[in-house]
Length: 179
Image 1: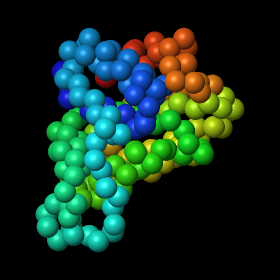
Image 2: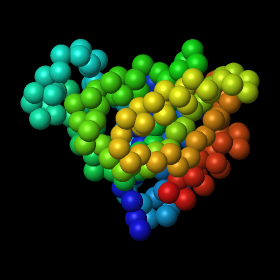
Image 3: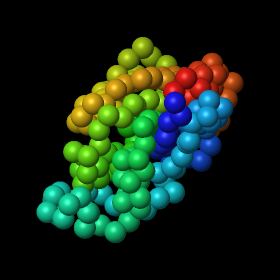
């Protein structure tokens, strides 16, 4: 069965390491006949959640008028969600975190999704991804019926594009192909 796949690329660098892995995942998923949409979060206007809970009183409509409404609609329509981030100070980057916080508007409607996580880090220590992975898992644990399906931990890649010459490119393609 073909699936609707949404890739949320948190990389602030176009063609940065995590963004490249998103593209490889997309190629694999498309090769298998899935419908894929990639959103580069840094190219969208997404304000920070202010905790006003206007959304709770307005049926999931946020008081902020920006690109997050479109992203939430894409999340709701998707079967599979890929979240990709470079590791910044052992956590997710600010771009992806803003999206996480803004899901509060419709978080109870986000159900039965398959999740894949792509993380890249300059450091290559054994535990460099632990906190980042827990951040990703923390969000998806809030969504009823969420299923973790795959993880890429691309360690030891710092310079833009450095990931191209690693095993992680093939891993991302194969993961996408097997959605």
